[in-house]
Length: 378
Image 1 (tube, rainbow, N blue to C red):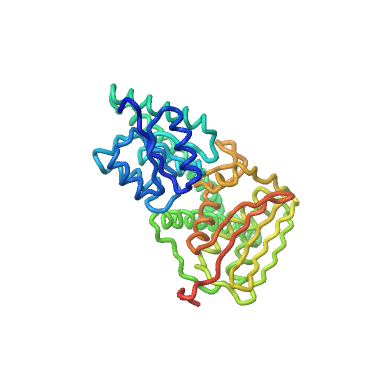
Image 2 (image 1 turned 120 degrees about the vertical axis):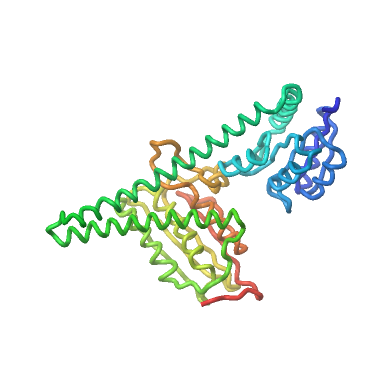
């Protein structure tokens, strides 16, 4: 390591980039800056910094991609890397650990904390240079294994309940345990309902795989109000029959709408599922799907639940994020619903966000009109 460490700051926000550079220089470090990943990669090759401080979400290559590119260059692979990110969920940590991140700073951050993290990372690097990096790699592997175990445990929990509720009634029917045909039908409906739960879980994992491989479907098809909006939503509401929720819907699509049917419906159902899940017993849940004059569509889901604090409104979109943790958690789910919903809408040029609401939680989604070059299928 140089006597005076050089820090390379990579961020596409000029004000943040220049402000950080000025503050870090005052601490006695040498500083270089780059406005995006491509410029940052070139700068790193030229100056061989002692540490890289990089944004995650920026024009390609993004922070994760840049770290992977640097790891392929023998001269850059060992340079420590701190991510600046607005997201701090399990998925980001897994990606960062896999790609060799040394630390994370979540935006917005306190500058003094950032400086302390920089000093800590540089100290660790010095120790690593003296003693080798094997121990640090072991820690990273243990962290990765822990995350994998948490995910697998959650998946096992979510699969076990519906499987049990499918197998048990079918075994009773096969073994002729019912004299009353109506009771037999009731148990068949129980099994069918849990088949739907399993199908939803499988669809979650299919869509997550599509997201990870960048091949999420974006072919627009005509959306039928009943088949692709109201019926799937009301079917999901049946899971929460014991809560006696009051549900109202307002759908106004004057010129229709186009979206990938499976992906759109699955995303929409996830949005209302959160409202059904976290709303109080007997509470009100409202769904609005309304088109604008330009052909765009706005969706709003409002509940009367506890709401989500502003500081968590981005974190809840992280993959596998759970409001409540551990085996005793109150709410079911893998923690991927909002992740999938945002990815589906984003893939179509839209957005999903949580907005301020006088009561409960309000999730708003926006789907732009189909572009002139896009093909719609019936």
